[in-house]
Amino acid sequence: MTLTADPARIGEHLSRFASLSEPGPGVTRLAYTRLEREAHEVFATHMRSLGLRVWVDAAGNTLAERDGDTDRLAALGTGSHLDSVPHGGRFDGIAGVVAAMEVARLFVEQPVVMHHPVRFVSFAAEEGARFGQACTGSRLAAGLCGIEDLTHKQDADGVSLAEAMRSVGIDPVRAASQAWDPGQWAAFLELHIEQGSVLQTQGEPIGVVDLVSGSTRLRLQVRGRASHTGGTPMHLRADALTGAAEIVLAAETLANDARHRGTRVTVGQLTVHPGSITTIPGDVEVYVDVRDVDSDRQRASAGEVVSRSRAICDRRGLSLDVDLLADASPVVLPIWLRQVVSGVCAHRGTRYRVMPSGASHDTQMINQIMPSGLIFVPSRDGLSHVPSEWTSAAQIATGTDVLAESLLALDADLAGQVPTRAARSQDRGR
Image (cartoon, rainbow, N blue to C red):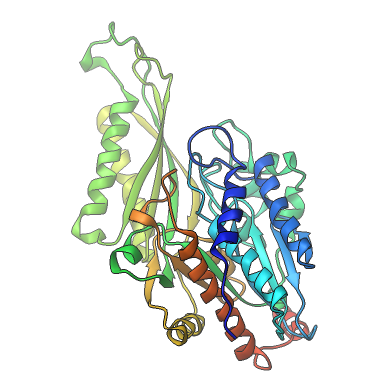
């Protein structure tokens, strides 16, 4: 069966979600805020209009289900997230949710008969920009996040994840104790923009992801001594910011040396106190993100960033405190699921490229409890997390067509080959 997504509908959905933003450039719709919940309700309303059953799980993830022709098979799933970074783009995550909405429409209006039920998901709190931890909604769904994480992780205003969840009507205790049942799921596919320039450079419309990078996130608290800029001679200073600046350059040097080929180290935020032009900085928070496709090298690199930072602080008469904000290992996605998507592309005559993902995604977490795959569509100039992030509606429509036909292929391939819901639940309890 050939299904064709409508770029105009996709564009309308993208524009509707982009309108739900705090003032300022780009899109700002942070995790566990009123605006994020409004976006989830837009998704829910669309799915209800198609006759699907809609609910919100304990973590604030919104799900919609279309029944299969039997209630014995586990569900196929697709979706992404609706939150953004501050002043980000309108496509990161949202493209995958819009693709899910369009697939749901195609399946209902054709109508498509499927053996498995299909669940369309909008994950909560995928971006780590607010609390330092990425993929909170999918982590909770996969049972990878406890109440301690929700209580201790805070945003720049000192609001904890747990407090933010309560502010939008989500119980963090319940969220941390009610993970998804793997027995209810057969497989999951996520569509996402690439957030890089490989597909555009190579002229390929589709990326089929084989590996998702891991990420270790650190907060380095550099402490010196605040004092008057005019009254304190240079040789008597304990300037936390000059120490932090040296740490930033040391991190860049580490990632560029021959031993760390493929490692990416980024300092994306410095918070300087007291923040006065006439006061020597006495305290600086340095936020470091270490990413790699090699798990051992990722953790070794993070450790080396810390050891080099300590040496710098010791030499400058500064102190250093280190907090681990989040840590996720690289994930190799199932080969057989990748082959299903590749086979669909080949059958359609759609060019594709097998490639890794440098960014984290909900798929990375959900793969811990069910086989999961990731489909990329191009990003113009490789830009993401900025207002100029851009993928055309036609490019998303092409990805949506591949997504829809991949779900149909999975439905045909897995029917009769995977355990029933009951059997999978029993296996989990063994």
